Length: 171
Image 1 (tube, one colour):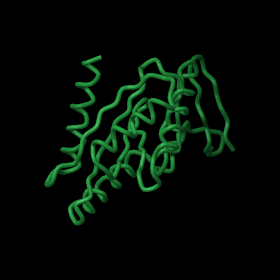
Image 2 (tube, rainbow, N blue to C red; image 1 turned 135 degrees about the horizontal axis):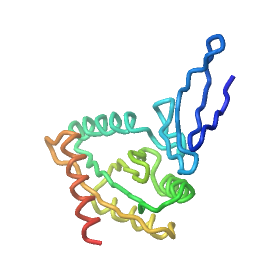
Image 3 (cartoon, helix red, strand yellow; image 1 turned 60 degrees about the horizontal axis):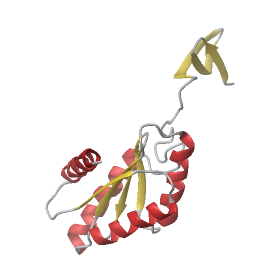
């Protein structure tokens, strides 16, 4: 049996009881939007995008396939403004799922950040960003990097972070 106990600004979801004692499992602020991650570890609870551990393992698999076949891998980071609401996050997730191919994966790695793993060159990733801009009325920041031979996934994500930071500073 689950109960929601509200104490001041806090809400405590209690789901397991032992005799008369209740043990809280999570605490959240009621007056702030809740943008949480999935409890199953596979998908983000809000957007149903890949959860971070699943996304990272997918990128490692695609890098291994790229080493064998020479297929290019491009990561695209899409960040929403800090004042974005839950509805805007959901809308962006829906748009990204519409413009992506079935073999590509979108992960929600932060509250307002999506990263896409695309099998293609920088040009194909730029075309995909243009499709997202046409479909979305909300502003967003984007950055993209292509995997280099011999580069680890950690180095690839580091370069993506640098590109994303640089693109935010340009605006």
